[in-house]
Every structure is written in structure tokens, then in C-alpha cells.
Length: 236
Ligand SMILES: [Zn+2]
Image 1 (cartoon, rainbow, N blue to C red):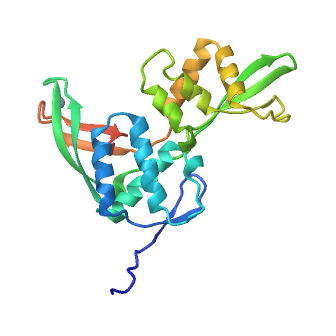
Image 2: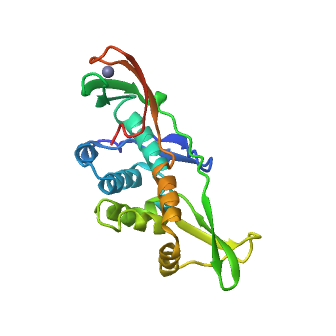
């Protein structure tokens, strides 16, 4: 019998709260997940797979990934990739060239060049109630809101509305006191009462949630121009 195999643990600091956790490399079993991530275009499936992967890779058994924002999950995933595969990611980037439509460019990026700034300012919306004005705060989309991401793929007129409800976080009066405990039904009722302009505002905030990104620089094969572009969805 072989001696028990030790798997190395790597400390990482979660950008959002500064807490240190440990990750271990994922095994070959997860390769099939990663191929699925590449092939699936919808965010729901991608985040679900990344969630499963993080549950395996995060060593601390009591660590609850439900409160992680989507951007931070993607950032931890990159760290897991780095220790499991290597520090280079290869992908095919589609650049919209002015001269020659679309150019497919094969890229190699270093994971250390991927940047992530988790700062996110919640959006406060004032609503009128019978007890006077209240503030409703809309925050991050987190892993616990996974089901809402599913609805955003469905493309019906509910599109985005469930995400807006999911991002509805807190309610308190204008002095910041009298916090009201919100149920899911309450959140839905609040969102239904909002004018479309506010929904659009919240939707835009959700679309701009912090995510890992990289600054790409390359010469376009179509027009020869030197291009600098910010890329946010290079690994999924
Ligand atoms: Zn070009």
C-alpha cells in the first residue's frame, strides 16, 4: 500500500474581505467541467460549474461560498486554475475589426496579468411608503442568487427582473435606522412598484458588477492597427 498522498494547500486572500483561505488543485476529474464551461455560453451553467469546483478546491470545510459575489468566484477560479493547470491561459479572441469584419486571434495570457478590483458601490433607491420615505439598497449578485441567473438566460420579458429582485438587499429609513427584514415576496413587491427607469438603472449596475479583467494588446491581422482592449470574459 502506498503512503497517503498529500495534496499541497495554497493560501489566498479574498479580495472582498481580506480573509485568508486555502485552496488545493483540482484533479483531472474536473477537466470535463472545464470543457463544459468553454462550451456553454450561458452564465448560469458556468457559475454553477465554477461553484462546484470551488467547493472542491477550497480547503476550509466550513467555508460558505453562498455569500461570494460572482466576480470574486471567478477570481478564485483563476487562482485554482493557476495552481492546477499552469499560469498561462490560451484562448481565441474575436476582435471586431473596422476594416475586415471579425478577426480571430489566438491569445496566450499570463494569469498574473489578470486584474480584479472588487469595489462595488450599492445602489440606493428611495421609495415612498405609508410610514414615510425609505431607502432600498441594491447590491451584488452572489452565488446564492444562482437561480436568478437562470432566468436571465430565458430571454422572456422577465429577463433581468429576477436579477433585480436578487440584488435587492436591504431596506431602512433615511437616517439608516429601522432596518426592515425583507422576505423574497417583499423584494418582488418592491421591484414591481419601481418605475422602469429605476429598474434600468439597477440592471445597468448589475451588468457592470466587478469582474476579473485583462488589458489585451495586439496587432490586428486585418488592418494592422495596434489594439488595446479590456477583456472581461476570457475564461468562460
Ligand atoms: Zn483591425
